[in-house]
Length: 219
Image (cartoon, rainbow, N blue to C red):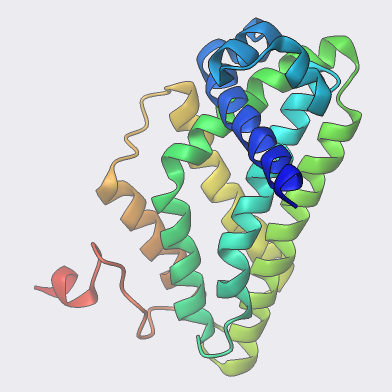
């Protein structure tokens, strides 16, 4: 059992080191040697867990996605939360994790550029597709529940609405990553979250975030 824990801990350490090296140098500029040096282990030890740089990046991606699913799963499944409260908590989670998502988003963009030239994107494309499907399914479920409960406006297409939310959040993050000049400060992020909730609820009583309570806006 101890050996198994040690192996799991070593693998986690390599993934953490790889994330930092990929972020600092990009996919193309990262080497297994650099990851090993950053992790404080021999190069061969990295290969004991990950056969290639491509596989290492894929595992970093999968690890990050797994952590997000673990963090959000309880929110999606919490029967004590109404749809607006559930959506607000998910939007708060997105904004709280935005620096990490942007950091990882840069890696994904850079990887796609390299993988497209090398025709190695198959497994990564599948992983990203599963991740998008996860968010689309979960958000569509929240919207559908809100329509049924009367919290959201009638006639909404849950899947189309979920896709719109995802495209809005992804678009904001992409503009921030590319440095287009879009001001993604706390006020702008809160305005986006409130706009999404207002759109779905037509201005009904909504759960307020820490920085966007209705009373503050009406004063």
